[in-house]
Image (cartoon, rainbow, N blue to C red; front, top):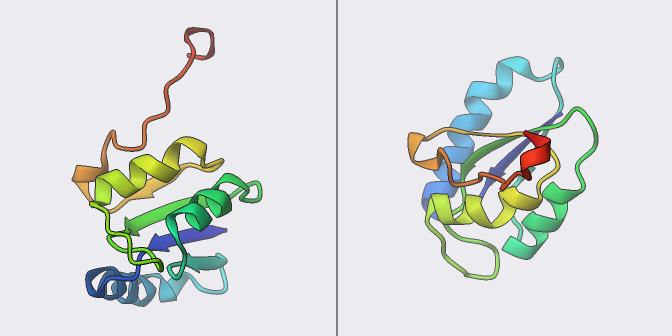
Length: 107
C-alpha cells in the first residue's frame, strides 16, 4: 500500500492532483490511500500505525486542516520520526528532514 501525504493549501491540493494523475496507471496494482484532510497530530498518529508493507509518498504538507502552516521540511520532520514505514519525497529539500536518530548498536 502507498500512503500519499499532502496538506490543505492550494499548492498541496495542486500537487496531490498531479500525483493522482501520475499514479492512476498503477491503480489496481497498488492500493493508494491519500492523507490530506488531517491535522498534524492526526498525520503523526496515522503514519505511526500503518500496516506492514506500506510506503509513504510525501508530496507536501504546507497547511493542515486546523489552519496550521508548515514548510515542507518542517512538516516532514514532525511526523517522520514516529512513522513506521519508509518515507519517500518528491523534493530534494526533503532529504535529511525526516532522519531518525539511530542508536549506535542499531547501525
